[in-house]
Length: 239
Length: 204
Image (cartoon, rainbow over all chains, first blue to last red; front, side):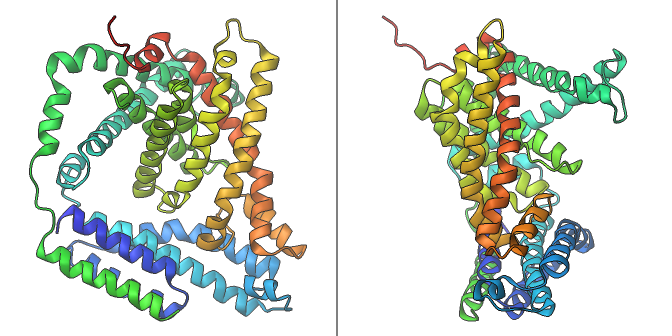
């Protein structure tokens, strides 16, 4: 499977999950997603747990608000009906199932490319070169920012300006950490743009790497694309 | 429009959105702070408004896509909110760049403009986000604002109105904080970096 096909499949399935109006449609979508995840031949348990971990806090809030406080579903409020907690439960369950399908779709895509580096993934994408270059630069600068956060935090703790644990001092001087990190990465960016990259020809090399020909779609992409389309049609048809 | 320093600025601001937004999300603060880089990008590229709009939107879009892939899969649904924040930042907030960089800092105009532009950004963002929050999340996003939604629903408001009112009470506070941090970072940015982002002047 290619990244292009995976993204197309993911978008179709997510669109289907958003369009779906009942549990039956969402069950069909989840079944196809499970098959897709299993086709990666990797353990799908972490993906399921991650998706559940994202949705469970939302489910708790929804249960509290819709079932505990409001006690009726939105369509009942709109109709001015007295409503019931059972309808509120059904509504919250449907929204949570839809959110779970969206979260799991992304995790299932990750499973198929678990052995790939971000650069290899971006390189294989069919996208404008400038978009690919921006993605790679952003990923590189995220690493730079995370390193800068580590260094600045350590320096400010060593200087006694902030502490390791939550404290009023952190609240008062936390801004210094943000400012230090920003100045560090800006100075690094100036150095790279003005001196390092032109001398090393980094951007020209990056252009060459990202322009390398890659297959646009594979047979598996078409098969999974058809499955994603079937999900969307089923979700629209069952409305 | 997309010179190398501007590409770096976009990537830097997208990375800032990702890093700060994720730290806030992971420590479960009741605010978002995931558009600081977007607002900052618009400030950095002002007075070239078209470049400010394009570059800030790209920075915001990359930020929500990366955060959506790694941390919160529902963020990309707020792409139109990103666009709204960009438009307000490039067309309104960026007018205060002189005040934001004034030496010495003039507290009254500085904080006055931060609050005014923050509230406007928050109101616009709340209006654009409300339909997404209603349709995708059923009005409840897992933050403290869920209780505000519940309060308005209990008073008989419909879901869209309740979500909109809840957004209008919480978003201005969050966006004012974001404009404040963006303005302070803009103030701290070296003059040299801002000069690199200006369009190349033709030789005379």
